[in-house]
Image (tube, rainbow, N blue to C red; front, side, top):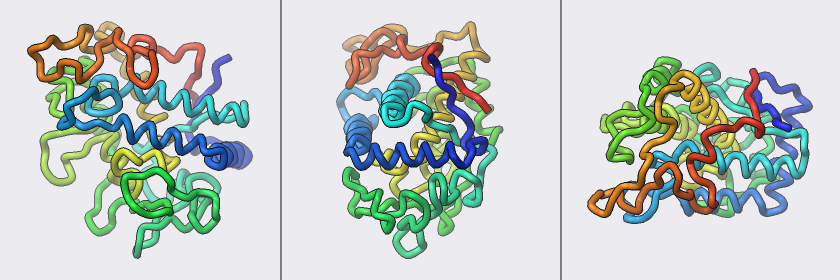
Length: 290
């Protein structure tokens, strides 16, 4: 039976507590850090001459859909009534938003070292030490809004810029793709300064701290961000039913710079045997509610 992912702002106090409790138990078991390691391992950039599936590639959406679903299944083995909520950052746009409440994600990092001091994931609570990361330090870090060099969260207009593009992705199928919904929502651009980061990438920059780079899963808000990204992909599919749901349909040939560096629609996405095609629909697995 399909479960429902809901907007974090609509969760009751009891639902927030159950979600947080499941996160903390997964962390105590050591399973949470396995997801952190996986994301670090598969965060491959354009400059690396190896297969890219998680980022800077057409499989950004289906790879993270499967990643999020595997994580959600792990949570639901602990508490079958739990699902991953989503954070609509086009509406909940400030450090005072409910997502940063002490009963959910906790607050910002302190100015001196960016250490999160409030909420269930504060290091001083003794329940959330960082074990797998690309940076040093045992405590969770955030720098909401980057006060020293401010950046805003994406707006509804930013999302519409991506949603209105009827093409799923375009060549050269990486962070430099000039068009296509995938790269516009993932958020890579050729712009300079703050405009370089759009949508999904801008959210990671706005949160800062551990949300920067491959170790971003260390911050539990990662999942709420990607649940919303997944919802936006679903909305894009519904808006453009006649568009190719995934591109490229065929793998690039030996003469292409992307040869064996991205996956086509029917090729498996490591570390699973799942193909992008198998992840195009979440029907029967979960739904989205308000």
